[in-house]
Image (cartoon, rainbow, N blue to C red; front, side, top):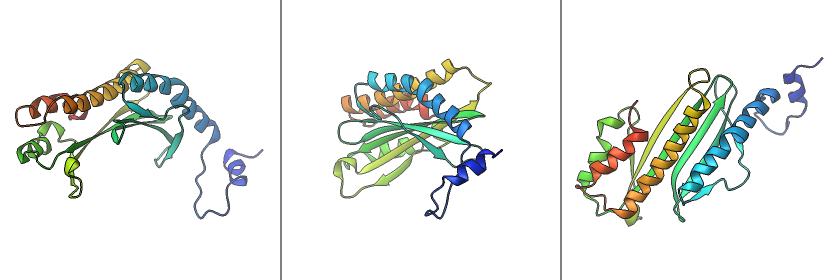
Length: 204
């Protein structure tokens, strides 16, 4: 009787120089977990923001390099022109990980105090924001990316905890963008913005 490695090796594309073999039963189990259990909750949270989002219909999962079989589902929010938030839920047989990114674009006339205040905030010391400068984009001259990841083994929390973490990430990131649309991120309002961002991107 063939094992799964032998069965999978028969159907690989021999034209490729590198191949990845995944246990089909575990892959099916993880994909079903991501698409059937988590995607409906994720989609509901994305739609509630009022922003454009992806994927719109049928989500796709991706392979991730890891010490064990890991699959992921990526989802995003858009303002109509660009991405403002990207989330990724990764699952393996051992546990889960939720990764969040928020993309903050600031005008070239933004006070340097605001930029330094964000970058030096100790609440983000676990994974501090990164700065990129785009000289040819005056409205997004300062581009600051916030990142955070949190996860655990399956036995530590129930599904409701994971749902709440996903909803929090989506909600806070949409409210961060709402804040930017309603307020000038100046020296008076930057602390208010940072307090909101700290709910997802602060050190735990």
